[in-house]
Length: 394
Length: 163
Image (cartoon, rainbow over all chains, first blue to last red; front, side, top):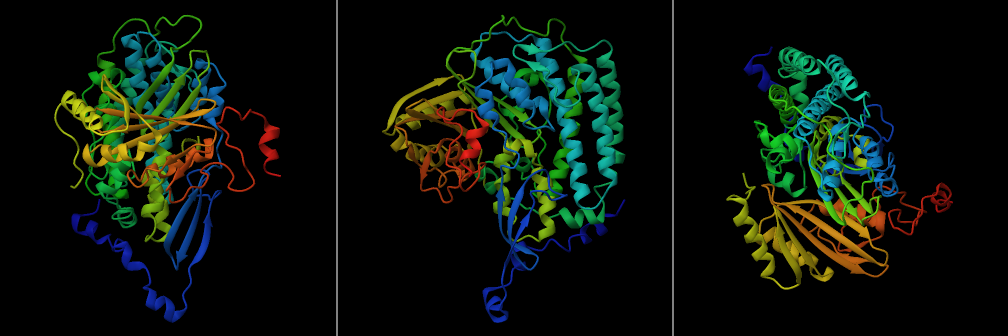
């Protein structure tokens, strides 16, 4: 890998962004005009269906206006017209990279309104599957970031890991992506025989592969540093002001993790650190994601070592009719704080369901930080936010 | 780092928040349950109450805004977090079919898209919002607000508005 002195050379592109715009005088003198450009909704490098209306001065972005709604399926309206258990498969389709967290948030919200005891084994399995789901989302997102910078190998390694976790998930839940595994009152089924050993074996292997395949290969790379260091710089004040959560907030140095500060389920019993970084740029978000994968591995090991015995489903009865009122479930998804607000009127369908998806809120950042950057810097910034089409459009 | 996160134990902070809200007028009801401070206010006082929350009490994070169509009135829930274990839920009810309320984008800039979404889905007009456009639905030739209870699910009807 590169030495320390060569790493610092890779900062040629990272001069302050404001210095790149032509001054008004020069603009008048040479008759310079800005041009409007559409990026997306079907751009090959775009993270799904997003359209950006860009105003460009040469190659520098002056204004960025995201237009959403190309994958809007009105999950909230659909949820209002279904019985409580039938909403869970709908939530699966919100963030299709990290489905477990979506199910978990909804189930927590409804369980606030129900008088039900969740068995400890079900709680532990929920946390276990959530951490696998987080790894399954974080590692490909690193691959996507590098793919957009022109490196093809990391995405292959990332999808190798994702496929292996999907095989584990398939054995446990019966599905490779849309799991429908976490149910009101517990989980669908217990782990199959021999599964904890299998998971342990995989997690040990991942831990040994993480350093050569995802750190040594990427971290010291000169092109990676030149394209990411100082790009998409966010200050902590800005991050808090914009309501960011998840990695975009933590990479600025603000320590906030729902699992730690608003603990739910089995996370109270787990020992883990909140990974933060000070730089607040794309490179810092990469380091944060790697750190979070390490913490997830640590949590999975803890859960597997002390997996409680017993039932995996609470006593729910046949008809689910929560009491009237508000139920709010809040979980840390791979992209940030995901909250579900369920309003019940005492019938067997929800009166209103509101999904607070982290992607929608984090995407506001594009309007704020893209202006002043070069056009090709938009892709690394999207890698920082790591949005998912289904999640920002609902 | 200029971001100051709240310190001290949860109980003292919760009672400090409750006292801070009770100290100003316009509060109709307030209570503490678990780690949640619930405040009910009149719609006219909402921006002022959220200013108290942000400036005086230092609650940094607006999590989301939920609108509920109660058939004849609209119930708005503003969920605030202090990022260290306490939740503050501010509720207000707007009477009538055409809801109008003051925008909080000047207090919590993150409310920008939350309010655009509420306008798109329910037609709630936020006074003072810098850029109140639809967020998800078509910008032109679509005059429905899909999450209203009066909007019935039907493919035909959705596309009628587009012709």
